[in-house]
Image (cartoon, rainbow, N blue to C red):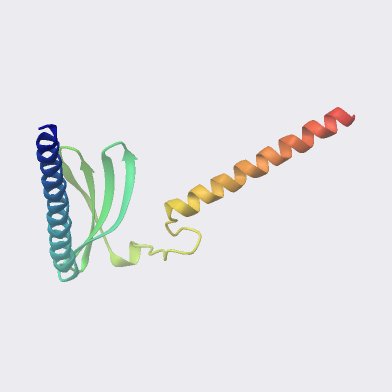
Length: 133
């Protein structure tokens, strides 16, 4: 009875697919729950990372607001070190403009595609002009 073995294999595959989907759903809701808790804690907390500047790979300078004070710290893979405290008047706040806003991957990819098409068109026109000349 080869049909019974096939039916059993199909049932096992179906159970595995259902379990996989169940694990994905659990992961999704767990991530949502943890992120929600972190956002709530960040909104009502006294700490805010105002700006981060990368010095080297895994080494950063961070400007952190702690209550009404601003502190510069150095953050690396293994340590966090206090650098200095700044007065609020010494802080330059920059508003994010249209040019510096984060672009979506789709926008970046489409702009690269347009540039590539323009370059190919220019190359074709140049090769036609050199053949004529």
